Length: 199
Image 1 (cartoon, rainbow, N blue to C red):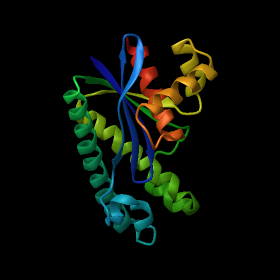
Image 2: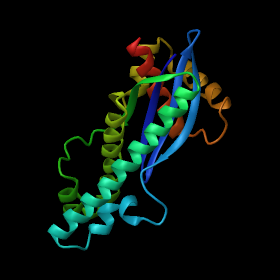
Image 3: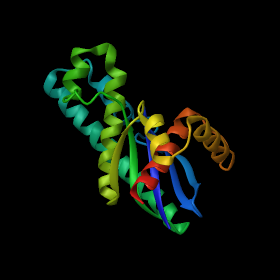
Image 4: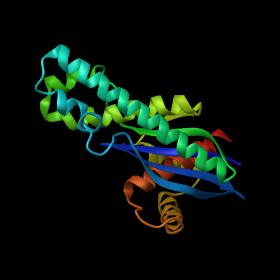
């Protein structure tokens, strides 16, 4: 059975939901968190904040090291998730990463230094980059879905009204327990849409 993984980045990691379609119905296999930092390791948690007071070259080196740690942890976490799905008899064929409209930011270090109040944005975008790296390392196909456009897109792909989608997401959450907040629902919906779209 094939599966999809929905990913919603947040500072320090991401929400990840593994989902399969069984007898035409979505079924959650795993709802978990993947960490892109180690406890106590501030450089992997917020590399741009750590580098904020450094000279440009020193800051670039620090961010590169922090980002390398994030990449490795994302790859390890995604591989562990893929292994858990395989143990459940499923093969992940696609990962759906939720994004926003921040694609115009091409250099996160320059952005974080020029707009210090937007440091959290750079940290979140760095986690997304780490997840892209991790998905590539697992050999899984990657699609990116705009988070704000997802509800309308999901309604078109799934052929369901928004209220029907909300009800299904609520029912799916009851099969896995807490936490089942907005982040988990969005990751779940991204995986569901990706799997239906690729069928």
